[in-house]
Each structure stands twice: as structure tokens, then as C-alpha cells.
Image (cartoon, rainbow, N blue to C red; front, side):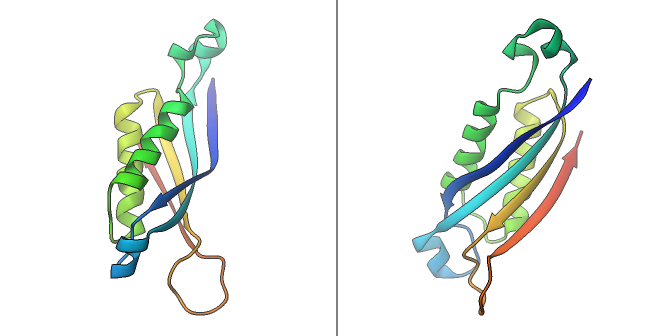
Length: 120
């Protein structure tokens, strides 16, 4: 039985971006992460060991966003997805939308976002 686990609006403060002030000041990043998982064993056993512990996924994402630095959101997105699949073998595929609400571009806007997917 396949399911999608949605982690919605994970908010972290990171120092990613091309501009020097982005590295110094940092800014918020918001992640929407969808994990495609076979939940048949978990549904039958009611045991966390048979699924993906989303608290662990959240902590992994937090550590990457808050402790690492990337110039491009493309690189940050790839790093997050690769780490999630490496750390959680029950995840068959993952889709990440990474929002940068305070992107330093002129005009009135709600930021930029990128959506990327990675499968085994």
C-alpha cells in the first residue's frame, strides 16, 4: 500500500544565497516535503519502525538548512533530497518545494520557490 507523507511548511533560518549579506544575515526558508512510502508493514503492525519517522526527517532538514551553506536553492534542494533518501531507506521517492520568501529581487512579491523530485 503506497502513501504520501506530507511535511508541510517546515520553517528554518538559513544563510543560503549568492549575495554576501545573505550569508551574514540569513533569512527564512520554508520546506514542503512529500515522501512516497510503502506503508503496508506499518499499517499491519502499527509500529513506527515500519514507516518513516517524520520527526527524524524534520531534524535532518533543519540541520542541513541551518548548519550548511549553499549559494543556490537548487544545490540546497538536491542536498536535502539526497540526505533524506540516504537516511530513510523506506522512502521510495521525495518531492521538495523549497520557498525563499525574502528572495532579494525587486518589486512586490511573495518570494521564489523551487520544486524538485528524487527517486531511488
